[in-house]
Amino acid sequence: MLLLPFLTTFIPGDTQAHARPERIASLNLCTDQLLLALADRSQIASLSRLARDPSIAFLADQAGAVPLNDGSAESIIVERPDLVLTGTYGQREQVALLSRQGIDVLSLGPWENLADGRSQIRTLARRLGQPERGEALIALIDAALERARGTVPEGQSILSLERGGWVTSPRSPLGEILVRMGFKLHQEALGLVEGGVARLERIVTTPPAFMLLDAATDQAVDNGTALLLHPALAEAVPPSRRLVLPGKLTICGGPSTPAAIDHLGAEARAKVR
Image (cartoon, rainbow, N blue to C red; front, side):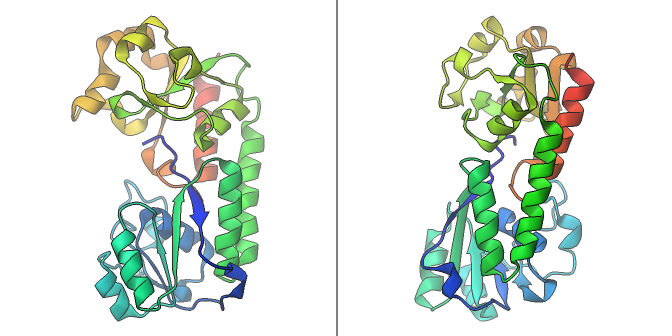
């Protein structure tokens, strides 16, 4: 997945008023990664069931010794954490039940841009009592962005294309990274100034110079991935002009972000002429 669903923060109340949490549970893959990156291990009560899956969890190797939860509010109540981290999609019932039990809940959703990401990292790091770790992670992201600056000749167009023809917003974190590298985003040429679904016919008749794809889309497992392997698309944008990026680098923002930027830079230096 190339949406880079980096996180932005919705935080009820003043985070500065809370004491440093000593038992934190995470119900979301992306909050798992941030918690592993920013908290002491002694602070982590449990992570989501996805935290140890190396195909999607960037820090799966660091989650082996940490207990996993089943994602239900009932099991979390039994754990009695003093802070629970959740996503903003599909967990409203859990959040409501936990809040009624007096458990502090922090809900984190997709980053709108990299500035949102920096703000969220700082806010969460301070909430965890680890502000210096937040600044260190932000420094890693900014250093990777600086390394990526001007990687490609300006004006080379690129389309980040996902399964089913989905195209992300040009103002997304991924779009910001690609522009920093020197690419011109191809969404506008397709009439998708806010992102959306691109029709195969339109891409083929108005092709970008390069495409960015998830590394896992080299096989057709359903109609959504079959589109990416269509012969007409391969002719319009052949494999030599396709950059690939492992999904586990882009599913969540945070500790995987510097690695994602560096991987993109390496792909561009190898393929963009």
